[in-house]
Length: 321
Image 1: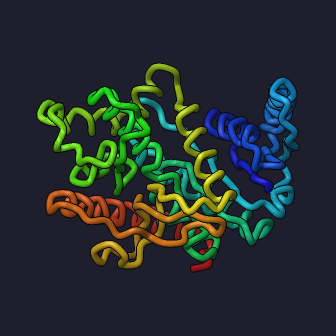
Image 2: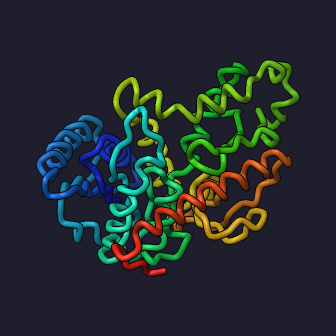
């Protein structure tokens, strides 16, 4: 399978491309950048090829600034955009990134019309909506990374608190990838047993844990300038799930049309069944009253932000939907 990465000169883009090249199910990775960054992605491709040779992996790695080269891609990963600094929120970069995402989504629709778009650029929920509207693709083929990485971070923190292997932790975060993320604590289980039935649950500080997950990206950005490895693995994990038609349930951003408590016309992170054609089904989750209230708050916040961003694009972008 062929996968293209738009924004491969950026730190997340190149890390994602490298992670994808290591996947046995990917036969070709195209590193796409603008013309002024072509030299960099050419260097990245040479470096990656050396690493693949050391690991006895045979994969084609193609650097390019010609977006026609994404033709026949099964998945196009969009990581391009204005990076945020430690003091910036994900929403602070929304307006400049929206035009970038709209432009690239339309290029994907032109050159890889049968592909699946995976949006990484922040704020990912709003950018997924922009890509969905700009591409004209059916909603099952426009996905955002959403709360997948948030959920992985949460699993790790819970595993540490309960001192149990991370593979035994079953939990997820839904809603906004940002300040209004919702921890589904009511259904969190450890080895098939509800977390609340463990003695350590009494000392489980939910607010502190959620705060750590919300600010995980900012912590990393403050220390090293950007997140790379976490997003890269979450991206390759998602791509592999699609290509292998694994039917796994991941928490990704998708367009909602009333599937969860009537919430519609907004892109949010929710559990989805993922297969070869993208989102096969949105999983309606049972939530506590507080969780449902918080989820609706997240929907309203993201919907208002999305309306503002879409208004900023009027007259600049011809939307297909």
